[in-house]
Length: 211
Image 1 (cartoon, rainbow, N blue to C red):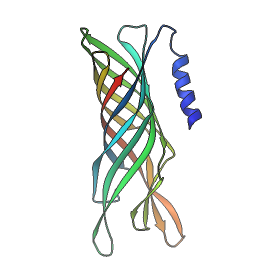
Image 2 (cartoon, rainbow, N blue to C red; image 1 turned 180 degrees about the vertical axis):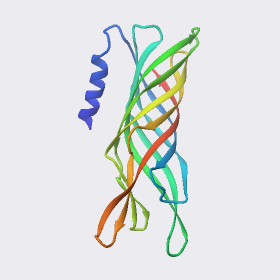
Image 3 (cartoon, rainbow, N blue to C red; image 1 turned 90 degrees about the vertical axis):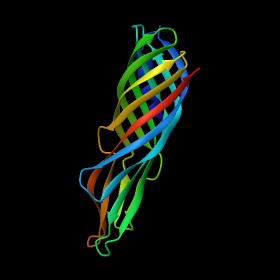
Image 4 (cartoon, rainbow, N blue to C red; image 1 turned 45 degrees about the horizontal axis):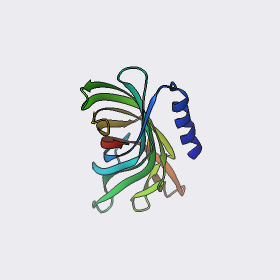
């Protein structure tokens, strides 16, 4: 994982001209996860709050208003799924949680509002690496939520920078591939079988301070 991160940041650095302006900072914020499944396994899916935090870097390019940012964020997301037991009819609620290292790399374009602030829009890919448990029981020993070791998503958002140090952003991070899958236990064959794919996208509100 460390080698992958080093290669990603090295690729960004090597692609930049020597006159680029670099600023380092700390970023954190809230996640509101939107979990979607290719097939229904329950009665209801509910979003839950999570968070992200970590170092970030902003690199100004020699083109007015244009820059690149990259971060290495500890990211926690969760959602609730309600499942009804077939025999008793009782409803069981389970929380699906993920912990990962997320590496967004965004290109951004800003419009200045004088010397006090600017507004900008940004977009770019994000690379995720699972840090927590890959398996979560949904219904006793009959169903599991299994996370992938890595995933790719993309960001699209807007933000503002105030006094050249404080940055506030809002964006939607949407999964480009499956985040995980639900596996069902086959008692006859004594094996777990993949049943449905899941995608964990998220609305995010963040604040960053650049030194």
